[in-house]
Image (cartoon, rainbow, N blue to C red; front, side, top):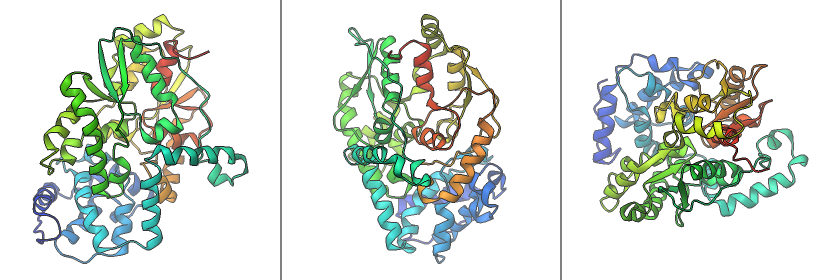
Length: 415
């Protein structure tokens, strides 16, 4: 694609990168075939190719409008287009580079700005989010249906973690802001499983949100600040050898953590340290092997004939290119995986997307559940807290993290 960008719209370094990405696009349209928002809305401007043209128009000095902002906002950031693209266009990176300039040239209404600020301020901070969630659970029976369904119930499953007396290694745990508050049993399941392997998960003070919340809403300075905070916490431990890796049970967080080197590449004080941390990041599905899971399940109660519908989050299958990893681990634990229609399609969660774009999100949720729920399915499994909460609010079957299922099979569940 021919692109001659206007100076001053982006910083020089970002402009060169954006121009390179635009030139890689051959506007073939293959991306529209797997774009969730295009499947629902059918508008060229709500597909990756159309959005690339909108961004190109702005970067070449064209006028911006609220309508352009709307079409860019409707992008879920799922990266399905990147998996499909034969030219390797880095669409998500282009969106990250462009969003701050879009917000500057087409300012949102005051209410929208306040809403986005509130979401970025409250949700990533457990000290604020936890009491609000507790209050929501307390009054949940009194809430109208549309609000009641988005307040997750208290977890009913608990796991016992045995102390690791002589650990082979340690890993720094990212607890996750929403995950550790809304579904703490996920990290407990991870701690219990890794303890069986002689690996201790360490909770390091000073860590916080991975930065995904700010990143998805175009608040790049806030996202970089979150990354710096986590780098400051983990880098000294990696250098001293106190931990060998950084561990996350949420594929969405893992994807952002692994991109810290790119996110902070322009920060001379942090670039090298951020890259060191990013290289140490491991998703939960990378930490366990089928052999180990099979051995743990053989020593425990096993899967007990449960049939699982696996929902592979976009962050895992498109961002981390990890499709097939969890399926192999669940099979090794003894679970039977059922066929799932449209497994590539986003569930509609996408961070705060379900709150900011509820119409498209709900349509994708119902379409996803239609592909997951069949009469013989016992449980739906996923790997990302956002997907888990989003699916659970409408599913007729329990929705759990795959680590919980493996921990159950291994006998880590507390009685």
